[in-house]
Each structure stands twice: as structure tokens, then as C-alpha cells.
Length: 619
Picture 1: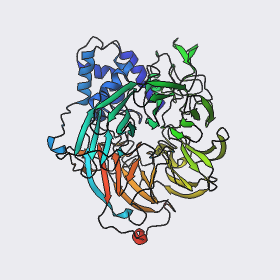
Picture 2: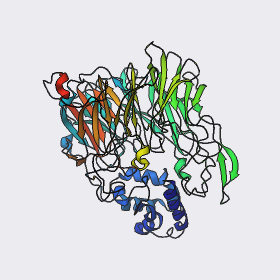
Picture 3: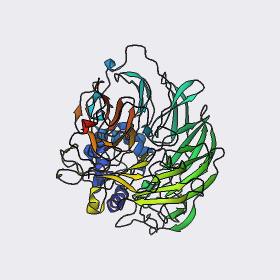
Picture 4: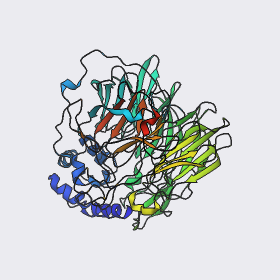
């Protein structure tokens, strides 16, 4: 991964001067982009064909504010616009007027959030779905987002409405029963985080972060903007974890992207770090900021004479868990992005709700400093520690053991799952490691828990071979003991690495479980990178239902729809419905642009015999 990125970074630097004066976007692409995107040598670099399917807003943001910004240095605004037009091609898809609701529809305010509850259990208890009827799920309707290749945001679902943020920068309010569009709010950047539905006064308000660092508060009934606040701590700050409302405050995690900017040898790496900010929910005013490291200071000069800075990093990717009983919230942090490594990286952190004071932290992996200049041939900006890049990307869960004592459950990209004691400054109660983990492996986006067990998706990629442990695993909350395991398997032979000649190969290369898992009643729901969504019996791991989303769909909004890899947002279940976002055109995975809504067939009755001859365990 790192070596290819470094090679591309150097080639960009060498070519920088050659094409500055040109007005031809094809020449700019050839000089600045082709070396990496014509024939990607790593899973993180999209091919030109993949770029063509991206939304122009997303590509423009990457070039002007994101991690591709160093590669357009010297270009004017018009030249960048021409390059964007060349990269994304013809994107004329429009949603027809017939896709909008014709009848007057109201929105029923109902709290909805990433973790379903403040404890982030991702357990939907109030549902008609159970082990006896989940086999009867069938597709109800599909909605396609035009001109995107990634579905990166989890929707929020109420009694009558589905709120869907998109990488095209639109937030849709869709009628839950039919998928018609009630209203559409358009931001000026791609919307990146999950959307949270809260309240200001008596009205429902949606909170969502864009791919920059702006939090948008939008009226749930009308789609009108209530307020918008930039929560950046540094120029390289970004938003990934969802904002969470508690009382009259909104708690916002802040991440950073100079982990990618560091691949440019002349970049002074690195000054930004992660944070959590508390906002006044009614106004967006910033009340306090908790910093994950101290401010960076000059440290040493790299091998090409550029000043390095540190400490940095410890980005907060996760959605906070709210512990009202103890007056704190919990988040996880990522690695440091420059030397020196700190004790707050790869850590679980407890932060006071009132004033942002850091009460305690637990570090999962020490001495982890990494950025995208690292790899087999580390570039000038690779920290002295050189990895292993073992973030906490999955949100903390507040669970209880069999005696009613609270435990904090946390999963890490190292493949570890931890149980911590919130009443003893995060003291370790037990730890389990499932496989070796990697920068793209281990626990990626989220775990889920019920009264007795925690369910853990593992994203170990195929290039780890027999050392990897991709699948879904269940452990006892009391002591981490094994309950069951589903070892993921491809079941076919792929034509090669990545997607091959087709965006949607018959046998996808990637097949692990990276997306956040969830629970509906007695059923564990998990989506895989090969596009399949599974329902497991939470008692023993038996497969109760599965559906392959890697195909085209007729959509209620008359836009071409195709499913792909299921990553990040996971599956949402409400009442007798299951909501799946499909498509994640990153890291060589399959692109897609659909929201799929499944329902229990009318008249379905629970029946334990529905499992038929399925084995009690799988894998």
C-alpha cells in the first residue's frame, strides 16, 4: 500500500512544473494523475474508470481541500474545473419530477442515530423481525443516488421517513412506505457522516457533517437549513464520525486528512490532531474543545530538508457514546501521523460532558505513528515508528455483564476486542484478538451487542491469506469467551486483484466484513464487501437469510441503480423493514449507488422451522 503511494507522490512532484502553464486538462491529467490512476498499483488508488463514476463535487473537493490538493499546485480555478470535467466525464443524470411525493406528508419526529441509542449498542429491540420470519424479507423498493460510486453515510429512519445523506452533497427525506422524495437539501460539499435526528425545541432537526468540517443542522419537516457551523480545529481537519445530541448539546468528533497530505515529500508533516467539540444544539456555537494531543512543535528535518512537526494525529473517527450516569462520553482515536508517538493515539478516551476535560484514556497499541508516506519503501515523511496504523475506527459500546455492571466494549483495526471498566479509569477486564489485523483489517467500522454477547465483524483483506480471519464472531460479554464464529469465504475464484475488467465482477476479490454490524430482535445483520447482506441467528450463528446486492435494480426515482460492496454504514432495521446502502468504490471494492429497503412479506408468521436444514453454525 505505502510503496505505491510514495511512488505516485514523487512522480507528481517531478511533473509539477511541466504542466502548470498548460490549459489542456488532458495534459494536466497525463502529468499529474496518470502515473497513479491509469494503472493503480495499490487498493487505495481508484482507476480512471472509477473516477468517471464519482460525483464532480467529491472530485473537486479532493483537489481543492482534500488529500489530492498537493497535486494541483500552480493551477488556477478554471484549470482545476476543466480537470474535474475531464475526470468525471458526462454526469447528466437528473431525478425526474415523478420521483417526488405528490401528497402532503409530514415527518414524525423520532430520535435516530448511528448507534441507535446513546450507548451505541446498534441493537434495535422494537422490531417485528426475528429468527422465525427473517427468511421472508423481500425487496420493497430501491432508491438510486445519481452520479456517485459510494454510499458512505448511514440513513436515519423514523415512523414515516428515511433521511439519506449522499456523497453528491444532497440530503433526501424519503417516504418510508414508497421511497418518493419529500424534500431535498443540497449542501456545497459531499455529505460524509451518518445523519442524526434530534430536536431543537419542539421540532425535529437533522445533524450531518460534510466532507469538509461543516456540521449542517436541517429542519426535518421542511429541509430548510437551521444553522451551519465549521468545526475545523486545523486546516486539515475533517468530519467522519456522526454528531450526537445529548440534551441541549451536540457532540462532534473531528478527524484529519494530513495522513494523506504527508505523501508529498515537501509537506511539513504534521500539525493537525483529533478533537471532540461540544456545540450548542440550538445555535451551533462552540462551547468547548477536547484535544487529543498537544499542539505540534518543530521536531527534526526529513531527508529532503523539510521541517517536521509533532505530536500530531490521534484523529477521532468514531461516533461518541454518551454515558449520562458518569457524565462523560467515550470516543476512540487513530494513530499519530508524525513522531513522536503519544499515549493518546490508538486509544479509548473518556471526556467530561460538561467541560471537555479528559478524565482517562486506555491505549490499545503504543508507538503507532503512521501516514501514507510509509510502506515497504518509506518516504521522507514517514514517521520513525512506521506504523502499524491500528486505529479505533469502531465506536465504543456501553454494555452490561450478567451482574448488571457496565463495561465498555471497543474493537480495533489490530483485530482486538477489549472490555474496559468505566468505574476504574478504563482498566482492562478482558481482551480477545481475532486474526492479525491490518491497516484495512481487523475491526473496521463497528461492533454490536445485546444483553449477553458482542458481535464483531472482521475485515481482514484477502492479501493476508491464511493469516487473516475475515468473518463475524460472537463473544460473551462477561469474559470474552467464544460463542460462535462465521468464517467468511468467497466461494469462487476471482480473476485477479481488485475489480478486474468490470466494476462488478461475478467473483469479487474482496469478501470480508468491514461495515458496522447491527441487531434486530434475535437476528444479527451484517453486510460484506462482496455485496451480500446476511442475517445470522444471534444464538448460534446460523445463516437465516442472505441477499446479493451486487446487481442492477429498478429504482423508484427512475435513476440507474447498481449495488456493490457493503462497507462503513452497515444495516439498519426498524419495525418490519431492513435498510441497506450498497456501493463503496474505494480500495479496489465494487462501486454502487443504491439504498435498498426490504420488508417482511405480508402475513409472514414466525416459524422456527424456517431455518430448515441450515447448519447450526457456519464457518
